[in-house]
Each structure stands twice: as C-alpha cells, then as structure tokens.
Image (cartoon, rainbow, N blue to C red):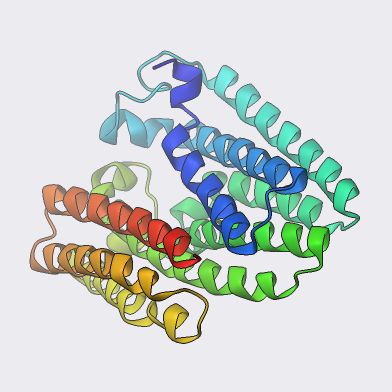
Length: 284
C-alpha cells in the first residue's frame, strides 16, 4: 500500500464515514450536503491519524515499527505537511457545507474537531483517560455531525436526537477499545513517559474498566429497539455484537498479556462493525 494512503489509516477513516452513512440511511437523506459531509469526515479523520503518527513516531518505533514514519517511508516533515493539508481541506469543505445548508454548526464542528485531534496527538494522548475520552467523543461526534447536516437540510430535526443516541453508544464502545489499545501499547508508552490509564493504575484495573465498558454497551444497546428507533432486525444482528463484546471482556479480564490485549482489541473492533451493521439493517 502507498505510504501516504496507509498513514491516513483508510479503514479507520472509513469507519468514521460509515457513521455519517448510517445517519443518512436512518434519515433517508442522500443529498449532496451529506455526501460532502462524508468526504469532510474522511479527510479530517485522515488528518487526525497522520498527526497522531507524527507525534507518536518514537512509540511506534517500538510498538509498530512497520508504520510509514518509523519505517522511513515518510519523513516527519512530510507527515506534518500532509496532516496540515488534510485538516485545511476538511475545514474549507466544512465551510462550504455550512454555506450550502445555511447553518454554521458543521463548519464549527470540523474546525474544533481538527484542533482537538491535533491537541490529542500533541498532549491529550499521554493523559490518563482524558485522551481516551477525547478520541471517543470525536467518534460519537461523527453521528451528531451527520444529524445536524440532515436536520438543517431537510427540517427533520428528530434525526439529531437519534444521532445523539447513536453517538453515545459509539462513545462507550470506542472508550472500551481505547483502554484495551493502551494496555496493548503499554511498553512503548512507558518509553515516552505517557500517563495512560494502564501505566498509572495497572493492567488489572484497566481490564476492569475496559470489561465494564464492553458490558455496559452490550446491556444498554437494546434500548434503541425498545425506544422504537430500530426494528426487530436490529436486535437479531445486535445479539452477535453482544456475544463478541462479552467474549472480548472475558479475554481481557482473564489475562492481560499483550497477545490477549491485541485479541480483545480486535474483538471490540469487530463488535463495533457489527453494531454499525445492526444500525443500518435496523433502520429498515
């Protein structure tokens, strides 16, 4: 894969775009503003991933030396310029989007999110829980961003409430994965003297928090069906995700080795993808 494509982590960026697409499906809106919103989210998320790798190059040299910067395929200067360009284009698109729907909120969300992603990579990532909360908040915000676009474009204002519901669950699920990822990366984070939750409080307590969040997401997620936001199809698909989350919680609570953390992280990611599918199918 081309290094400049790899460094934006397209899979991760597409996951953010999927949040926008899901709200579009639920709101049955496929107009140009929501398409432009999806492109904006992809570019901003890509910029966030690049700037994160820029600040994390020393940690990645230990934990993930195959990544573009530590492997020498992209220089630090080029990575910084690339991230800046992605952020600038995303903000410009956000401004155009706000102009199209006559609402300043999307542009404000894009600008503030870009600043938060930069600050996360520079500072917040190394602060226990605060960095995890920041990245989880940004994930949930993708849903709200899409909801605001559709509401402003069509007048379907209840979509904002629905997007907030989905954003909350995305926040909880992402928090669980962020804690597990910090457990997985603990050795590299120690070298950089980061103050992540696993470093400050240990792997065992971290497993309790991550396991609790996985179980919390599993227990609360059926509410979206009982609140009549999604159809019964949602529950059917969701049950697979719940099993995945519970298995991930079992693995991380039983054993906190790097191998177990990596496996649990993958399970949470798979679970999140299944939940997204449940959101889409449940909207029909």
